[in-house]
Image (cartoon, rainbow, N blue to C red; front, side, top):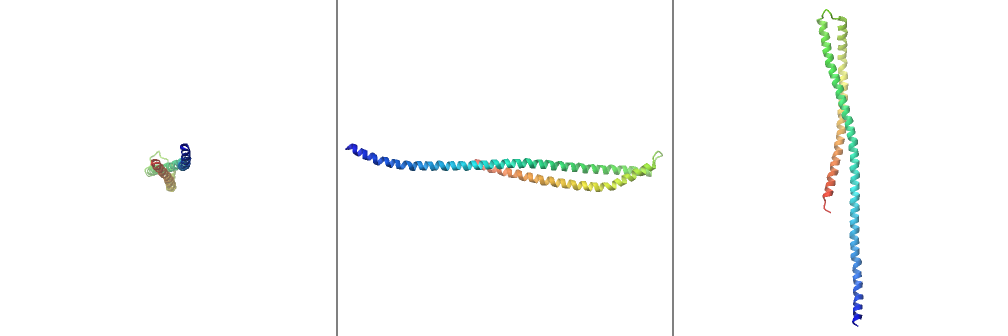
Length: 175
């Protein structure tokens, strides 16, 4: 009889234990599922950040090329303007020298040659301000383009800095 009650007790306790196991297993399974979902979301966020970073790097690299070319154009424009300014100074010196020699000729001077030289430099001095003005305008345009391209590069670098800070912040968050 004692065995009978032991068997009945066992049969009553075992189903209760089995009833609790699925509940505990279910909670564990839900917790694991939640963790997997969080990991997947973090992985997707990480991949998106990585792709955005790669895009920014490509855009920055491209923009740096544009800035370099704009800088070269500005430098060429500066050099051409300097050439015209130097030519104007030389022409002024040659024109003054030719005019002085016309006013105070030496016996060996060719008067006709000096007159031609003075006329040439006078005409050249009349042309140079227009050329200088054109080159100054080209320099202004080139410098403005350089400023525009540099501003775009600065904006891309600012975006990269923001992304870096966001990634640092995300990495420092406790799990």
